[in-house]
View 1 (cartoon, rainbow, N blue to C red):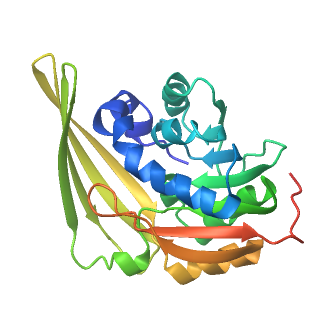
View 2 (cartoon, helix red, strand yellow):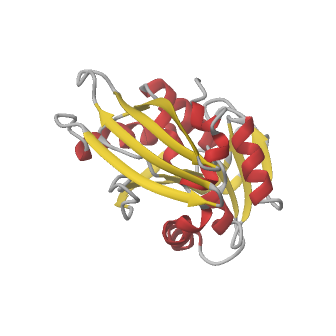
Amino acid sequence: MTLHRLYNDLAWLWPVISPPEEYADESGFWRRALRDKLGEGRHRILELGAGGGHNLSHLSRHFQATAVDISPQMIRLSTGLNPGVEHYQGDMRSVRLGRTFDAVLIHDAVSYMLAEEDLKATLETSRVHLRPEGLLLIGPDWVREDFDGATPIQFQWVRKKGRVEVTIDEYLHDPDSDDTQIESIYTYTIIENGKERVEKDTHTTGLFPIATWTRLMEEVGFAVEVGRLPPNRGGYGGVLFSGVLHTQETSDG
């Protein structure tokens, strides 16, 4: 999997452009979703694609958390923010930790799965890391029903931290409506200590209809519910897939 610049040489921008405090409300929704299915208690949760750990920084106050991400730079950021959380570098399609959890969470990092086989491999990873009747929560950035691709979408936001100010421009479009991929072109205008520079970053992400998500989850062994997440900045990320692992589907992890 290609490491985009934001998760590689530009990873230092992440706490600036997407600060942890902005995740307080969103993490509250995830926490309530976990409580609704698992009940009270400090349950064991695994986040795949945890990134810089900003969502996790709120959840780890309430749950016993473990984090996986493919980017060493993002693992470094998350470890600094969440020193009490176990971290592992790995690909969500293939990582195996050899133990199970009460819940697996995959936030928008799942959007980097570009084909059905990638999604199914990620769901298999989730399955082998869950106890029977464990919970899987997935919140992709987009589903096909929410983005028809006919008209490109543009976002802009500005963030400042210390002597660094960043203007982020995102151009989201669908270069080929016949495939399962869309493309976001990011322009970061960075002013640091009074000096300005511009960096570019292109992210290709997957786009699947709700029926594909539910079918693949059911094939792997989950009883699926589809709900809504409050949209985040920019108005995307509105679907939450919830899957309970069938009792007969025991983990082989």
